[in-house]
Every structure is written in structure tokens, then in C-alpha cells.
Length: 190
Image (cartoon, rainbow, N blue to C red; front, side):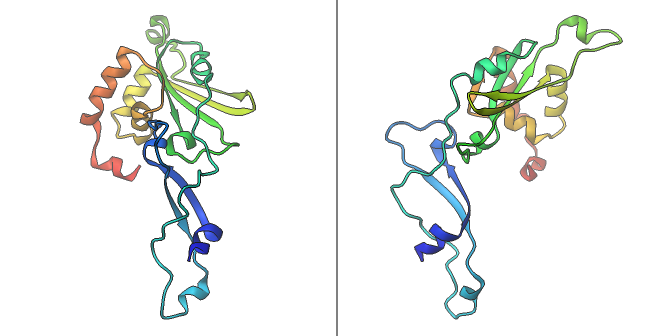
């Protein structure tokens, strides 16, 4: 039956402490996956198992290591950051050697860009390649971020509560403390 796992896996992810960047030197690898059994396996009385334990002791062929320059890449945006976190494959624990690095942030616009007829950019986006890693940095102005956060948007809630924090400030801590009051049943669909 182990051939079902080794040869028919269509999704494999790392979960637990390693997925959230909280692992230590003695931490194990907790993996979850989905395999597709061949159709002919269902034509018998003994059906393929719904759950299988995979091979133990092998490290997965993925990494969740965030490059040490990631915080500098976020700080390169033209406005002061309130926070910057890692999102995407690195956050979910299924980053591979060719995964891009998704950084999400909130920034503060100067008063002149907030008050008046012409306002500054609500969303900043910067893409590029650094040390062979594709980089995608997206940052929302605090007003835009707060509006999205208050509109049952799981995307920004995930950014705010990501355990992979690159840049933080007291405003980030305050927003994080408000997060439990903003979670609704609608977030279950995120």
C-alpha cells in the first residue's frame, strides 16, 4: 500500500511547527497529503484505504526557509512599514526550491497623501528577482488595510496573523490584539 503514497501523491504539505517556522533542531516533520488511487483499485471488494501513513524519517523535498534579506526587501518600499509578514507557499508549508517569496505588509502614508483631493497609493506592489528567488511584495496603506480587515477579508487577516513576521511595530501589535474580535463565521470559507 505504501506505493499509493510514494507513486500517486498529488499534494504533499508540511504542517505543524515547521510550517509556522517554530521548529527547533529536534522537531520532526509533520506531513499531510492527498493521493489518488487508481480506478481499478475500487473494482475489488477490498477498497483502497482512506488514510495511510507515509514513509517516516525522510525529510520532505521542500523548504520553508525565508531568505535573510526578506525584511530588507519589504523595507525597500517607499513608505514606512507598520508590519511585513510572509504569505503564500512559505506560510502554508509547501514552498519548493522554485517557489516565489510572497511578502505582505501595511504601510503608513504621509499626512499630505491622506488629506486632500489627491491621495497617495492605497496599495503598493513590487516584483522582481533577488538571489534567484522571485519576489512579490504587496503593501496596503493603513486605512485600506483597516477597511479590508473590517470587511471580513480573510486575506488580510492571514497577513496580520502570519507567524512569519519580518517587520513589526506597536501598531502591528495593536492590530493583532484586535484580530480575535474581527473573526466571523465568514472566515471559515477563506
